Amino acid sequence: MGENIDDAVIHVHDSGKGPGLLLLCGDVAPCIVEARATLFAEEGYAVFPLNGVPATEDVAKAARMLSQRSECTGGPVCVAHDGTVPSAVSAADEFDAIIAFDPPAGLCHGFDPASLPCPVVFQFGTKNAPGAATAAQHLSARLDPLNGSRVFDWPDAAPGFALPGQPAFDRRVDSLAHSRALELIRRVVGPHYDYVALFAEHIRHEFETRDVDATMATMISDPYVNHVATLAGGVGHDMLKRFYKYHFVDQNSRDRTSITVSHTLGPDRVVLELVVRFKHDQVLDRYFPGIEPTQEYVELATVLIVKFRGDKVCHEHIYWDQGSALKQIGVLETGDLPVAGAEAARKVLDEHLPSNIFMADAWATSDGKPL
Image (cartoon, rainbow, N blue to C red):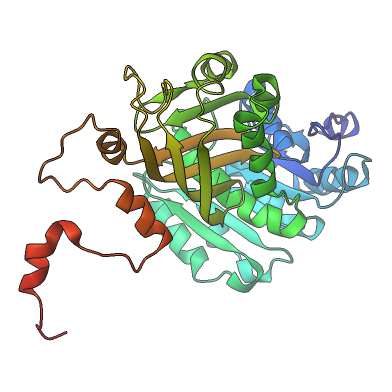
């Protein structure tokens, strides 16, 4: 183990530096360790993956080594899985924060987590694992929440859910847990990214410069975009670049505006609530595939959920009401169906506009009733 530490290879962000992160994955295949180290490096960290299940003294030595490396700008913090958690916790004096996945039950019942010198986030997969659920409850009652310490119980996933290649790996829950880990790590050691500004640069190239290469340069190497209502977009670099080049950047009306209603920020994403206005004066494959331009104006309340990996866009989920969009260009006859047109977007901007317009008769029945 000492040789592994002395010959340390640090995985770093494109910037060549970042807060130090010691990664303990246990006895898993090297490709899994490499994938996790790469992930955290892309998030902005200087990552040292320590192989196997190290003793406490090896964890402490690795932490000290990492903090002295030129690539390390702060920290270190520790991300530990399963059997490596006891050594990480025992060496807690060396860390600014610890993220512990599926710690052994013996550890959970054998110490006082409030006594740890740094904040810790415990994450448990508890599906078909009553012992893990009990341990999560035990720790949750004893943590110090004031310093950011938390326990997360993931009932949809079994122990081992957070390591790719493992039988219990759950991609969806692992992504949720990763965001929870970043909540603490970013708060304690950074790095802190301005996601609103980063995404503004991304959309500047989509809608202003209309430069596909510059757009792709704001994204990770394997991004994806999903316009949820119409399933338009692309998964992976080549498919997404094809989409942008032939079905997006040159299909944007010059008569288009976007009004921001809200920004909601998380540790690795931004949620934007917008009202988008445009004229259907050309083919718009992502909105109206197969429909010729109608010259109608469209106003749509739109939600974008943009996930970042470090300072690059990772993926986008884009939502709008397709019924409203089709109604506004005159290709959907809604009759008495409760499908709003432009008034839906306008009410997002002004909450005082009429409510309950599709349930006027039902609304009248409650007039004057006691509140």
